[in-house]
Image (cartoon, rainbow, N blue to C red; front, side, top):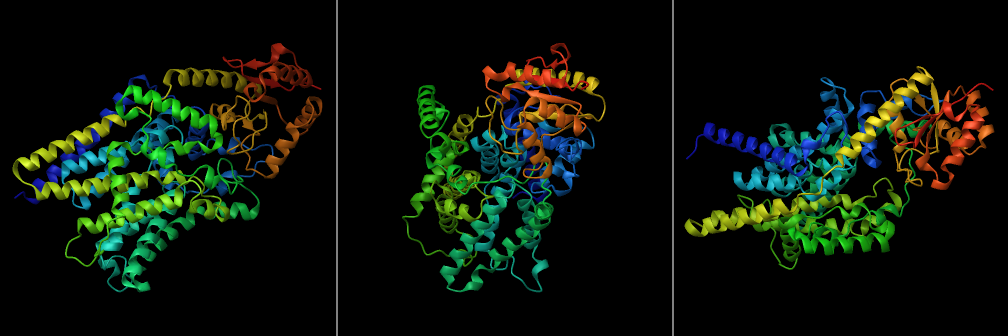
Length: 594
């Protein structure tokens, strides 16, 4: 029998080994030897948006966007991902190098996910080596790796395991989160408050929303079983804690909407009610491996199939392709569906110790309700008619993945406890083989185009240095073509957020792009961009603009040079006065004298 000190030592060593395994995985499969720490891993689309969020956290970006009628946009920025902001602030105490901070945030995500998974697996009774293996698997699920390449806040799903743990506690512990004089004497209640804070500040409202949904499902299961409303009290209290933590996060955004101010890089975007259907869950994406389950021929076939989907289904095949569960997750997912066909007298909370069957019973209900809510044309589509802010229901995938992994883990733990001798060793060998195969097969979903991004980053930096020298400190630049902020969609060959490239490389210039959608800044920006070149330049001079920042990728290829020539002539300067980036696509046109 091990002493407490020996147990603690082994626990610490296992955690260290887990962190080392994540680090080795990242270095090898992400090919980190190609990384330049001073250059962000991603520099386009949603990736460039998050590069901008890094600088916004320092207060170095928001003030340069949305001119000439700038009104302290950052005042109304919501803090719906406070954990991210705290991390950036903490790293910012040591360095404000945009590339370094951005890359650290991306790379720390699997560590946080793996540690959270390990903690919950240990809490529900899995032995160390199983918790290590399942924690590593969850930390680097395909969903996480794919989300790291754009929506980093969604890849950071470290509070998903704690959300599931709260559901288990609500079902199994009759004293958990029950109002009364002894409320704060229960250690789990204190832990629940901390978890609720983390859940509320993680995943840009999606993960808090899904967590509350699963708590509602748990409450309904308890109420229907016991036939009394009080059975769901602990779930309701837990939901209230999450909501209470969220209120101060969203208050600035609500105030901005009421005042008609909007804010840069955050709110003011129209969302269609059909978005909940378009970005909903595809069950096929949960089960079909883009890696071909490790077989190249199958991977090639899958690639052709996915290409057909993208071609034939168009907008219906989008980020909902990100959800593959991995080999181990598929076993758990299908097993939980089969559990629905097995009747059971659910005794959660009524036995001395939690029973495997009771836990699998609840997980199977949570799993199927996740499908009913999130799948295409499911209940999420109906809710989306009224609640338009939540639309990416495919983002429920990490919950389904954790349900599945937890189900497999609990079943393996039960069998390893049950068997002895050679039978246990044989089962352990099979488990190690399965987990090892699942770990290996789910790699390769995250691999940035390092060198290409680095070339573009340094080209843009050099270009903006020239522009700053020519325009002077504090100069205002009119950004063309017009692009609303944010989630505009691509414009010809220019992707969403691409107009942030200039502001990211300048600490002295001010730009018209980035105004809160529908605000005075944004309306003037759009209307002015629609004027003929001569009228446009006249208005720009009236507003004190120094020059035009032009991205030719935003125009059809056959119109790019004619657009540049027309603006150059209207500005009263010659082609030799125009500054070009290394690619030739970014241009600075100074406004000469009238």
